[in-house]
Figure 1 (cartoon, rainbow, N blue to C red):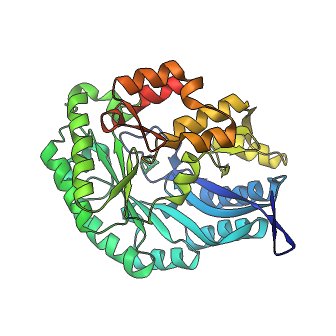
Figure 2 (tube, helix red, strand yellow):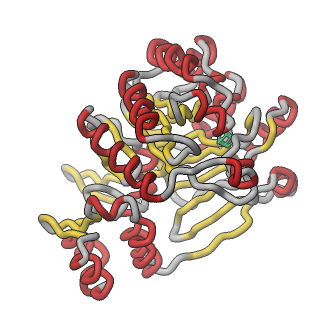
Figure 3 (cartoon, rainbow, N blue to C red):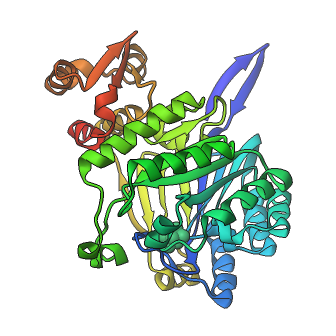
Length: 387
Ligand code: SF4
């Protein structure tokens, strides 16, 4: 808690916190997905919401937090009914102080969007929608195992704008089997034509245990060079259309960056509720059990469903800060970092920074350490050296 003095009054300013709520249900598993998700069954969802409320009530932070962002992710949170959503939001409001203008995001699948649902989202305080579009090409959507078609996307975006919010983010994917630079460009063009405020991009990776991994011999996947071309093609096209890249894979109009994700990248505290969710608070990294029955069992015993809780050292905290901070296009202010954490990045990581500065993967501009353009597509291998 920060204590300041203003005009003779002592101010107690609660720490801000971001909340993530995991909704693990999906109608059907997508062909590329290895997230924790389970088939939607209405009875199970009812039970889950009761337990989720229980978890929210049971968790007692030892500080006064003000919630600045709430993110309902999944799975498919747009499958929830008004009553379910309302119960979750009420449980949060009963437990925490909410900031004046919280960002409240709901991840939505286009197949769940209709006027009634969207109006209800607004009533529940949802003011940002992250829409899982992935592609505007029907063959690509079929390969991904998505349930919507291109033509369903357009009216869905209009309904969200008219009845809930203009603050829409579209998820787009590249590296899809048989995708070409032309079809990717067309998807980008169609996405931009819908005038979303934000675009998140994902490079398809084939994860073990997924349908696409099993069928990989039947498909032709864009190779790494092609993926890289698609990535830089996207950066160029979105820049031409007034989307600025504020993070390796995220683009927005100014003022519409994802506040929730920025909290992660700025190394701020967050708490996740639901199976498989993660938290970071009080210098601890915590993760919940993934399996829903284990989750229920813990809460039946009045215990939080925590599988692991690990205190992190100052050094780990600093290394996280660097890795996350370098994801942002503004990079890290070296002088601020030194002042705040008494840590000189270029000295403490002398060999690594020298290596990447001389090879042109890192740059220092006006005191800010940043990834260069050519480093963005291979950022994982660069950032891993700071761990
Ligand atoms: S909707 Fe999302 S979470 Fe569900 S299966 Fe598809 S990618 Fe996975």
